[in-house]
Length: 164
Image 1 (cartoon, rainbow, N blue to C red):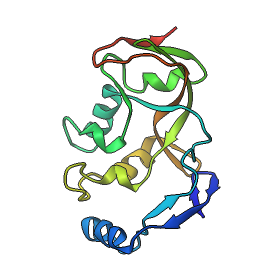
Image 2 (image 1 turned 90 degrees about the vertical axis):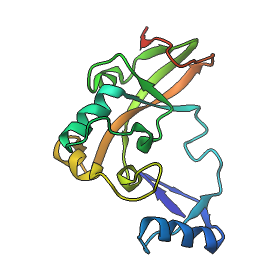
Image 3 (image 1 turned 60 degrees about the vertical axis):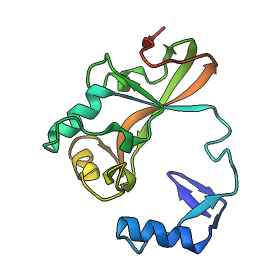
Image 4 (image 1 turned 135 degrees about the horizontal axis):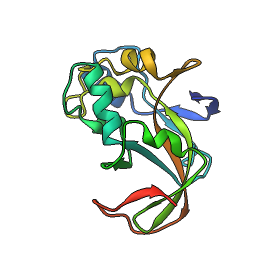
């Protein structure tokens, strides 16, 4: 099993060649690549991840980087027209994203993958250290929000996003 935040999830080791490739790319020999046995390990929920560009820019500026690459957070939805951390205020509310309706849930705990450059997989930004200085709740370092799809619909780049 592997612990994903607060859940123990059945998992198994993958081909050792993949683990070795990850270790080589990151320079971290502690890593072990596993595959979860449940394809819906998030609980069978149609989840989305949400962050605002302004939140990414805020984080980047705290680390001395302008235009921090948001791909490191693996977000499904990045909002262009919002204040920094405005998405945090949407917890428990319904929002429209294009033709879809999403109920915004909890903040997303972040992991060491966010410290890696999305193109090179090399550590290039102290994401977790910076989040620990102002986005820590208990032992979790929070950035972005989870959402659950209530009404499926088409979503296009440039679509409006906001509370209903």
